[in-house]
Length: 372
Image (tube, rainbow, N blue to C red):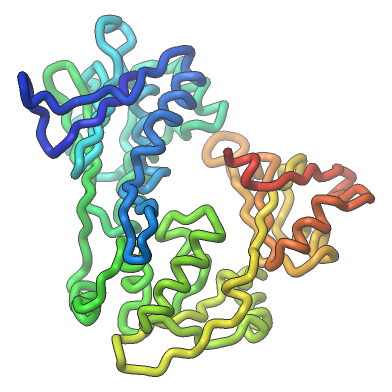
C-alpha cells in the first residue's frame, strides 16, 4: 500500500508535479493494516496557527471511518493483480482509497449506496481471518458504518466508484447541516469557530442540553486535555454555560447508565443573549483514564464501578465489545475506566492488593501508554 500526499485539489504533471510519497506499507495482512494506518493517521488532522499563537491540530476526517475504509480495501482488493497495490491519496479537500479489482458482478454501486447491508467477499479466507481477529464483521456493515460516522460528524456522504478494474471510496472534507441546524449556526456567524467548536454548537441546537459523552463521541476526542481545552474555549467565547454543578450531575447519573459524563448539563447560548456561569473546577481538573485488562468476557459496567470506586469517583466506563459472530455482545477482555481525578487513577494503578472480578485479577495500565 502506498500513501501519497497531493498538494492541492488536483494532481499535476511536469514542472507542476505536486505529489509526494508519505510512505509504503508491506507485509502480511495484519502488518499491512497496522503499518498503513500508522502512515495515514497523522494526515487525518491539519495543524493550524491559532489565535493564541500556538500550532494546534484540527480533525479533518473521523479516524474510525478512515480506518474502516482502509481495512475494507485490504479485505476486498484483487490480490491476483500483483502489479498494482492499494493507493491512498490525500488531497487538500478529500481522501481517496483505491484498490485493484472492481465490485463483484453480484453487487452494484446502487446496492452499496442503499445501505441495506448487501455484501460478498472476494477473498473468503482473508475475510474470515480478519473477522475472527475482530477487524471486520463481514455483515455488510462497513459501508453503513462509514456513512454513519461521516453523518454524525456533519460530513457529506462518501463517493464510491467501480471502474477500470479498480474500486475506490472518497471521503470529503466538507460538511452538511439540516435546515434547522443551518439557521441555528447562522446565529454564531460573527464568531470564528473551529470545526470542533461548531460541532458542539450544533449539538446544542435551540437550547438542547449536551452531555460530555456526546462531545467526546461527536467531536472524536480521545484525550481529556483536548476536551477541557475545547470546553474552556467555548466558555471564553461566551457561548457555553453549565446548567448544573458536578455534584448535581452525580445525583442524576443513575438515569444515564451510572455515568456522570452522560448527564446532559451543558447549554449553548446565543452570543450576548444570556449571562454565562463560571464552569466548575471539575471541568479543569486532571481527568485520568486507565486501561483495565483481563476482565471477564461477560462483565457489566456495574461490576467495574463497584470494584474501582474505592479508589475515587469513576466518571465513565467504556467496554469494547465484539460485533457479529458467536461472540456478539461479549467484551474483548479489556476496557477503559475514567476517574474524575488523577490521584484516584494513581491509587488504582499503585494498589498493593489485587483487584478481582469473578476471581480474575485485573491488569491496570495508563491508557495513554496502551493507545500509543
